[in-house]
Length: 114
Image 1 (spheres, rainbow, N blue to C red):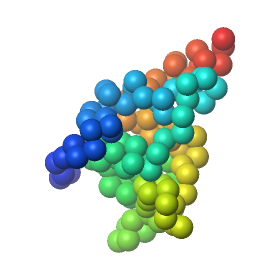
Image 2: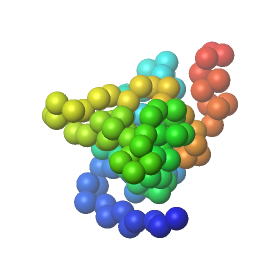
Image 3: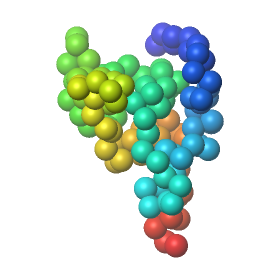
Image 4: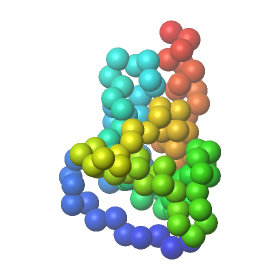
């Protein structure tokens, strides 16, 4: 697998997977500080993990074309100002965070048990 370098031109985005764990988008959905991820955060997580569009799509269960990638993943990564942009569903985002080892299943369950 080829890993592309990540240049941190936007200092507000996390530079590592570990840094994602402190972000509001990594909180459980019912946490008062939870904020849905921005398209830039979705893009950064995928880049930091080194996943291709196809791999990210397969992990969260959305369609993809082996040659063209996934239009769903592309839409989740598209800036909000674009007509093609779509918000990532919480379940898909949480699954990506789990696969990236940013959060644990226990964290989500603890929030429910409170």
